[in-house]
Every structure is written in C-alpha cells, then in structure tokens.
Image (tube, rainbow, N blue to C red; front, top):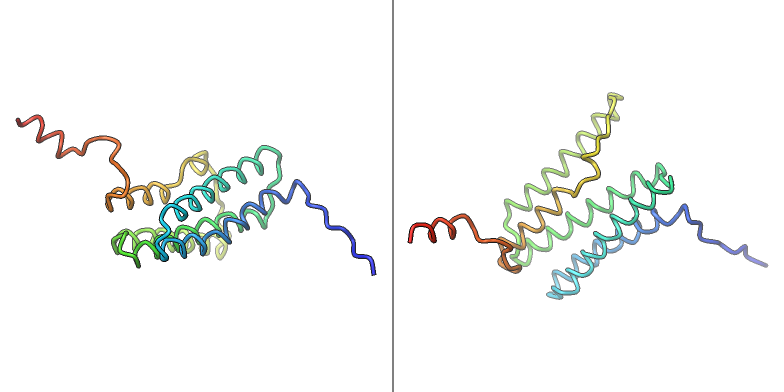
Length: 164
C-alpha cells in the first residue's frame, strides 16, 4: 500500500506555530517547576516570538483561518496561565498577581461567551495588535521578584536622592 505524501502548505505555518506554542506551555511550566530558569525564559521568549511571527504571517499573506483565530489565543492563555501558576508554586509570583492574570483571562472568556450567546457585534481596533498587558504583567512579576535588574530608579530612590 502506497501512502500519499503529506506536503506542508504555507497556509498551515501560522497554525503550526500556534500549535508549537500550545505544546511549549506545559514544557515552560515544567522548566520553571524543575528550576531550569534560563531554559524556561528561553522557551517563554521563543513562544512569544512565535506568537508575533504567526500573527505577522497570517495578516501579511492573508492566511487567517477560523481554527487559527481560536488556536492562537488558546495557546497564549495556556502559556500565561501555566507559567504564572508555576511561578506561584515555586514562590516567584505573589498570589494576587496570579489572581489578577487568571481573573483577566476569565473575564475575557466570559465576554467571548456573552458575545457568542447573544450574537453581539464586535469591532476590532488597532489596539488588538499592540503588546499584550499579560506580557507586561509577566515582566512585573520578574521585577517584584528581583530577578531582573531595574531599568530605571524607583520613584522612592529618586525622592531620597532629592532629599539629600
């Protein structure tokens, strides 16, 4: 029996990148839990880069699909939720921060359900393509932990220097 050869199609590239990000989510969380911080950060960074790349490819060449429109945000949510949960478990993220991220994602999911349930019109603005607040929150988690150097002095440091 001869099996037909499966050829990858260029239109599948954005979905393939999203699927790889979906698989990277539990791997990144495991790396955090197992103490492989550098590998976890590199995995998270690669997943973030693939997120930007798949969106660029899909929009640039008109390769959007209904499946991709579902898969991309699902991969993003899973990556953020698992990484924040792992950071909490290892004591690197405070509970309030994990709760904020989870509440945000639950609110987005609830809003989507309401839109679908009541067939509400949805307008997409350019703000959807700006950097995500959850990425900013992840950076705050590292700042609170002290893992990353501060890029500028804190306001309290500036005030102390002025008072001298």
